[in-house]
Image (tube, rainbow over all chains, first blue to last red; front, side, top):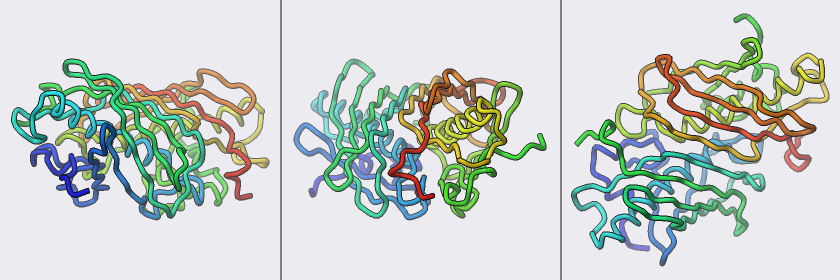
Length: 156
Length: 156
């Protein structure tokens, strides 16, 4: 995939997120891209992101779903508007609500594949379903209700 | 509060969690305690746990709710059984599902207060409602469905 990651098109002032901001030195740097009508991101958790030994920390999985969800929401909003991603005015989303079902334990030491699917897109709201798979098996399912960044959180 | 934190009573093999394990050197070391019939934990996010500038990363907030929820579930199960926390056989919980509503942006640079309330306790399942307050205002509401650790995740 040679396309830019969604997160690499965010303007600088919205690129400090711990989960996906390219300017957060300590952060996870999640990178999400289109794959047809779905979105995909691959990441292998750092060794210290363990919950129960040998299994990935649930909070990290929730975090990845959150960032892949808001990234997917932004990409979907740009696509729906027929605009190139990153063009102004910015379509940057934050999470209004997050739901995660941990169907199975997620093993450490393997890459995880996140897949996003647009469930609803309406005005300033996008609902994204996200799955996480390890070794080709879906282990976690999530849903992100993303809304365009409210005025009180804007820095531009 | 001089009582032991719930997480400090976890046996070593369940103390490596990034969010709350005392043996995870990189981790957050969340500490939860009883306050009457509620549970409380106070933590100030590290400066790099930012989402949008000046506001706390949602994934971190979800993580804190997760660990405070499972810790509360464990404490509630011990209390319901009339047993001292940490006594064997261990009552250690993992998260089956997590829901988070981000009602308002959470400011950086202040301590956050998590409060847990037992909503349901039945067999191997405990449902915990968790709020996060900043400067005495509830900004995030969550719910954790916690289940006793399944056999395939046990290390003892």
